[in-house]
Image 1 (tube, rainbow, N blue to C red):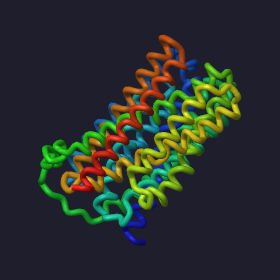
Image 2 (image 1 turned 120 degrees about the vertical axis):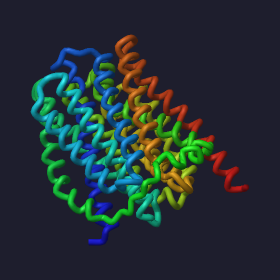
Image 3 (image 1 turned 90 degrees about the horizontal axis):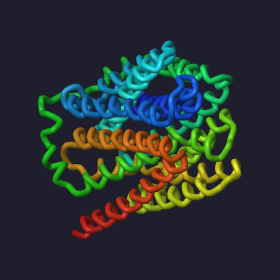
Image 4 (image 1 turned 45 degrees about the horizontal axis):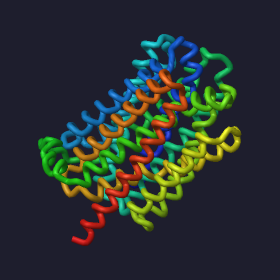
Length: 387
C-alpha cells in the first residue's frame, strides 16, 4: 500500500478514536457528577486538568519531532491513548478517572500534533482538504459516542462502559504501529525551537494561535457542557440529553465533509468567516429556543458552523510557515489545549455560581471574539497578498 495512503488511513482512524473518546466524558457528565457527588465547579476541573496533559504532549512532540519524526511520535500517542482507556475501563475512583483522562488526553494530543506535522512533511497536494477529511472522522466518532453512552446509561454508575468499547478500538489501532516505524524519516540534531524567533515574529502566527484558542474553547466547552445545559435549563431527560453532543457532531461531520471540497476552492479566509457567522447565529438560536426538536436543529447548524474552523486554521498555518513548521504546529496544539482548559473551567465556575445559562453565554462570547480574529486574519492575508 502506498505510504501516504496508509498514513492517511491510520490518521483518519486515529481521529475517529480521538473523537469517540473525547466526547464520552461530556456526554456522561450528568451521570459522573451524580456517581461521584461532585458539583459543576469540580466537574469543570475534571474537564480542564486533562488539557494540561494534552498541552504537554504537544510540547513533547514539538521538541522531539526533528530527532524522532512524527511517525514514531504518533505511535507514542497511540500507546498513551490505549493506556488511558485501560485505566478508565478498570478504575472506579475519581482519582483513576482523572488519571485515565489525562492519559487519553496526552495520547490524543500527541496523535493530533504528529498527524499535522506528518501531513506537512508528506507534501499533500491540498493540505486543507486532507486535514478536513481526516477531521471528519473525528466527527464520526463524536456522533457515535453519545448514542453509546445513552445505551449504557441505565444508571449513574455505568459511565465507564463506553470507555471499555473505546479500549477495544484502540487495541485494533495498536496493531498498525509497526507500520509507522517503517515509514522512512531522516532525523536531525537541530532543535525544534531553532526557528522560534522567525515563527514568533510573524503576525499571522499569533492571529492563528488566538483563533485556535478561541475555537477549541467554544467547541470543547459546548461539547462538554451541552448535555448538562439541556438537562438543567431545558428540562430534557438525562438519557436524551446525553445524545445532544451527537447532534452537534453530526453537523460538524457534514460540514467537514463539505469543507474538504470547498475550502481550497473558496479560500481559507472566506470559508472561516462563513462558518463562524453560521456558528454564532445558530448557537444564539439554541439558547433562545425551548422545544427539544428546535434546539436539536439549531445544534446541528451550530455544528456545521464549527466544522471547518480547526483544520482550516491549521492549513493556514502550514501554508504560511516557510520554516519551523514542527514548532509552529506544536504551539498550535498548545494554544488549542489552553483554550479548552480555560473554557471548561470558566463554564463550570459560572455554571456553579450563576447557573448553566451563564456558562453557555460565555461560550457564545468566545464565538463573537472568533469573528473578530477571522476578520483580522483576512485583512492581514489581503495586505500580504497585495505586497
